[in-house]
Image 1: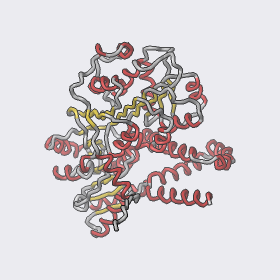
Image 2: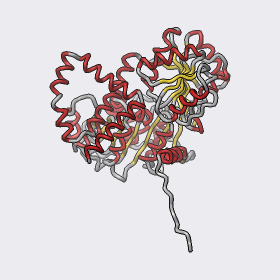
Image 3: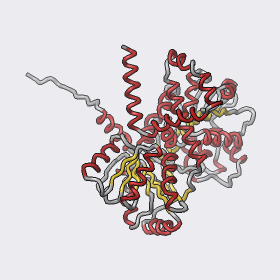
Image 4: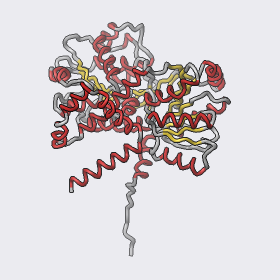
Amino acid sequence: MTKPFTTHLDFTSRAQEAGRETAAERVFDTVDSEVEESTADSLGQWARAAFEKSDWSGLMPVQARAIPHMAEGKDLIVQSRTGSGKTGAFLLPMFDNLDPSVRSAQALVLAPTRELAGQIYSEFKRLNPFPGRLKATLVYGGVRYQHQTKGLTAGCQVVIGTPGRILDHLQRRTFTLNKLRLFILDEADEMLSMGFYPAMVALKSYLPGKRHTCMFSATMPPKVRLLGREFLKNAQFLGLSADGIGVVTIDHRYYKINNSMDRARALAGLIEFENPDSAIIFSNTRREVSFLTDFLQNYGFNATAISGDYSQRAREKAMGRLREGQIRLLVATDVAARGIDISELSHVFQAEVPLEAQLYIHRTGRTARAGKAGVAVTLATWEEEARLKAIAHRFDINMEKRELPSSEEIVARTTQRVAIVLEEQFRNKTKLERERLARFIPMAKALAEEEPELMAMLIDELNQRRMQPDRQKKARNRDTKGKSQRRK
């Protein structure tokens, strides 16, 4: 008697995660290097007209390399740093592919922040070869809908904005994407960092099947690669880095601080601004590890320390919690961190420059495992900067010096992330739930005007939950349990 044929399907979360990692690690086909680069003279008629309105002396490398492939209508993924001229790389060929006589959305550009969306919008207006005939509407959250609705219903050909608010307008049927030709995802890594993935997935259902899609990103971690596979078809990859063509595996940055007293606060501000999925923070001494952990916990981060003061069992437990996403930050000394192997570590922060050059390589090597991308951030005092530059020179590391984000910049970035969470939660409310919460709108208005401290307290509580993965998970479990009970 023949044995029955049985197929076993593994739908466990571990199996699904393994499947996602395998998909993320598959390499995109690189662009044909023999394709001739564009020049200002080889641009199409309207792209050339737009170029002449700019103050550029010639095409920048990302523009010269990307435009020929975009002109052919091929889906394209471009890895290029911010400020490299990538906005022109998609705007110039866009002008050759839009029909000013068709008063419907033909191009959709997604950006992670209202500031970047505003910059793209301003650049579009500056380069527009059809002023008065070709129109764009800027769309982002945190403001009233009326002005945006007016622009969208007037028949603009280009929509530029953040995913959440654009999704809101699509759900309200303010405009449609039936005539969409070009779909651009700009700074995809930042969009994921801001928390826009749920809105982007929901927005996908409004996109026509036949479209030209291009994605731009400064880094190419697994989540961005998966996003590319989700939105693009047979995409080709174009990598541009400071040292030529190729994927930048680790992005090395450093920030100057005045003295050691500024270290903890500067570190907390950077973590809040960067919003890493998971990170290890290195310090040179056990005492500093303990101090930084306490500071970060009091600041609101879910951080855990490992050092020589901890048993091996305690260290393994802490690393397990980081792998499982129960904590985001692990603060460690070099000795305690030996043997750490966490594939999804997005950032390594060095609160101090290591005392030995080789330790820099060991530390930063904790991110970008198995060829994946990562970010290495170092804080350096005036005295430490010379030692850090010597390390960069010894190992031929392209290390970018950056200015610390100001308090205003950190607050603005955090405010946008909180607004994204609130808008996403409201978007998922049922009609009955919206009627229930409408009762408290007068109270919210009164508090905002008369007692803003109470409103700030509620917003801070929401932000604390957002910063702590285990609290988010428990809240989601409560919501899921409540919804299932309501269905019963």
